[in-house]
Length: 77
Image (cartoon, rainbow, N blue to C red; front, side, top):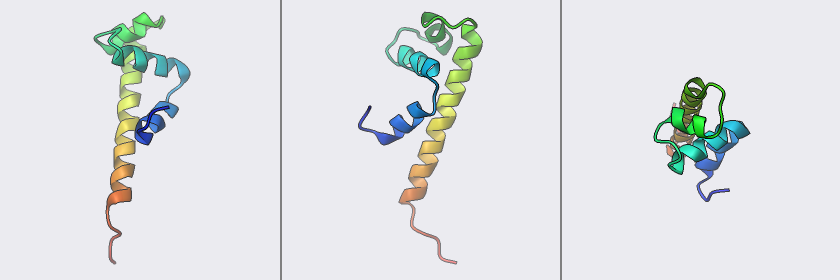
C-alpha cells in the first residue's frame, strides 16, 4: 500500500503479473517495458510489456480525470 490513493487505485486495476512488470520497470530492472516484462519472465515480453504500459497509462489517466472531477466546483444549470 502507498500513501497516494490514486497509485493504489491504478495498482488494483492491474493483474498480479502486470503489477510485477510495473514494479520491475519502476525499480530499474528494465529500461523499457519490454525489458521489464522479460525480466519477470513474460513469454512474449514485447507484447506484454506494451499491454501493461498502455493499461497503466489508461488507469492513471482515469484517476487523474476522477481527481479533477472531485475538485471542480459543481456546474450551475
